[in-house]
Image (cartoon, rainbow, N blue to C red):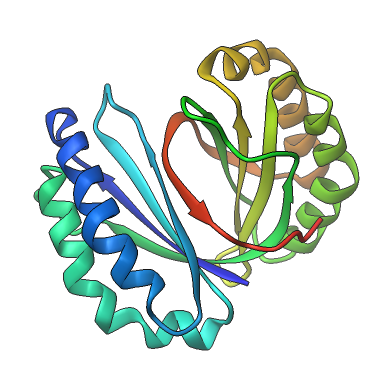
Length: 208
């Protein structure tokens, strides 16, 4: 399974308009494309930052959709109040586990890592065997996933919780996990974000 992410720096005042366009226009059109298995969108209403994710059954299906999704992406970006085209990246879905569906008000913590190509397989093993079991024990845990870019030696871990309150409660515990990851992998934490799960219709199968 593979995913395409589009990171957009929008206008906080345009978030709701952008979400409406995603729900009414982008989502139906994208999920009708061959090989698409869903879409999600994370937002930070205070800063205006948004991350839209589409999931695909294969790399071929994802790459074949590139031209068709371009006008849809441009329309959503404009509705979000962004003057740029968005930062587009492609990832392999390495680990995916769901405890239960995300409710209204669910939020996620994203951790962006880099460390070279030789880090990726070690990161997958560490996430699967050590990190995910610890995340599952946290109050309000909904799901956890690890996406990797083998060529660029990058990874992003996303942990979904029932609410922002649960995200906050887990901060100290997840900080200890990050410290271990950095120490054992020799990785660099490139970013840490806490965002609202505004739209969640990804149907990536269990890959734990």
